[in-house]
Length: 599
Image 1 (spheres, one colour):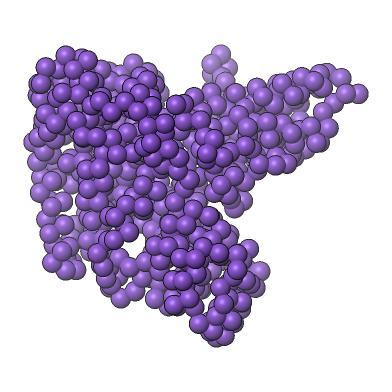
Image 2 (image 1 turned 120 degrees about the vertical axis):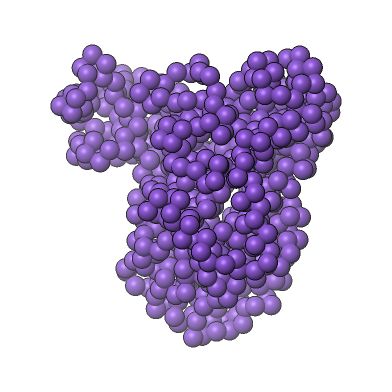
């Protein structure tokens, strides 16, 4: 079923309520004449920011038309505007990018020189995000009836934030949203009621937050109609947490007394209102959780669940089989497409197969351009950019945006493929992040970072007259949490002085210390990534890999060992040649107050 026909079948159902009817009408209006909306958006952005230093630097002269804009403004990456962003972080309040004052920095999960990118944002950007959020449930209500008859068990978390020298906060985009009045004082919506109290979501201690959210979900298990987290990895982390803590949770439910490890006073107060002794529920949880087989555990405990609300596109697709195992194959809804820089669009057929997910771009969010992308012949120098209305079905593009907050012709780094149109609005499938090799959660590790990490391990091995002949990597998501696996072939030049098991364990930790701050935060603060693993393979293994690739048509002259493997036969070959396995013996350094945000 194509996106268009499945959407049509969704649209047959009447809107669930008058508010939904207005939201759906807005989607129709915005997507009918995309090009004129985009022309208006660009003119608004350029007019609003006409007196900013950045636009004046390129002598735009107050022009708001596309041709002048494209002829004068360069296409940029983060590194090119980082010095200007640094000025804002250090306290420069002059209008550099936006005529509106910078309200905070959003820390991107992408990195620059191993540290989080800082994205300046303005207060009115929150209003645009809220607008997109307000469209999600009206679309979902078309496809899944009666969501007002129960609640959503959503595992939502905030992350550590820091302050720049200017006093402005720097924090992830979702932390900013959850701490905003848009979320905290949201009006009651019977179609969008959460089991988790705000106090639990807003607790920065990950154990207390997860424990209290899980407890509330168990207490209200019969009312739960959908389970969700931002990423698929987050929902699996919640299931793993239940595996580790179900006995204590059952004790709390049986006794009506909250685990003293949850010490946050505001959480204790709100849970005290709903936690009463319930031996029947406690016994039910014990009966289900003490079984060895956890297949279908989600629908066994939350029996009325209709779907899972998680992102399973891009790197998150690797978690689909595990989600299916725990949920009995429940539908997985990917509802929206967004980044730290801007929110972009929504899935108009949210209950489709993960492989068919396409996002309809909302043309009012920012001004979009697209660099044609050729996977077979990638070039870093952009060719002529294509406007939103002129993209072609089946082709891949790299996304470039100009935002109200002042980013101008900024390369986001996402590779998208056009799958169709809704009215005149293109629909895109998310293909991948540009240059990302490994990703388990919100981390993104590229080839240069991985090479740097391997170099740090090689420096230790040199002390034992040992060198790394070749290596590749793999994101292992069969474990919860997932973790990085590095396959290494070693040349041990002096067998009497070969590196010990402990030395190779230290190599794992040395590699982790070299990985970016997002990875280290996931390891240390969020526990969403497990210890890095090195698997040493037999000598000659990478020669075998080359032989295999050549047997499948690779050119012997152009063959390079892959730096990441996700093709099953290659992974199986590597695993069959493993001679020793090593794990990081500790956690790498990470502390929010000492994050180097390059001030």
